Image (cartoon, rainbow, N blue to C red; front, side, top):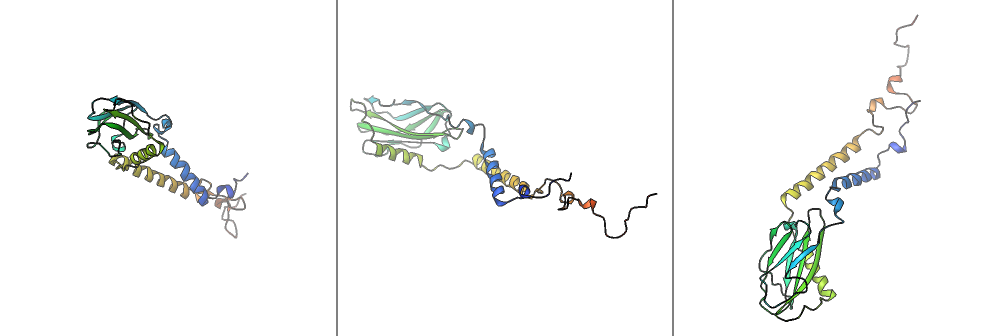
Length: 219
């Protein structure tokens, strides 16, 4: 029985190519790290502690997490009760899972720590907490509007893409382009064009030139 002729199933339509591209993109992005992105990291410990009432102003805020911190993709900000930022320079990574942000807290009152931290698996965490200095009482609860403003500000902080990550993005793009090009240029039935069946079920090798047969006569 001759093989199936070209039909709707063999056509390469633009919609089909888009679907193939989407599948390949998902495969490229599905790294072992992203498989556990739903787990992510979280704040493990803070110094000053969450809700602490301090008698002496701290010189910095230290945050420990359950996973390694990506320093180039993370940010910490500290604000006083008036909403003024009191961070004193950039934070530093003091351990794989720990960062320290210097602060200048010279005024008694409530302070708000806002942080946005990214982990190697691509997940991140954005949150705020408060502590007080010199008031003798725990900090007041943060209202919803202020909390949202602080988390939005820290999460929208611009970060530069490191060279290694940029290189990986370029390589992924090139691989995706090559795969799509190969799928697009491949013959519809997966065989060389010279061997594909014609509409009448024959191949080019079955066709004989018009006129007497060129084959030698048989006895």
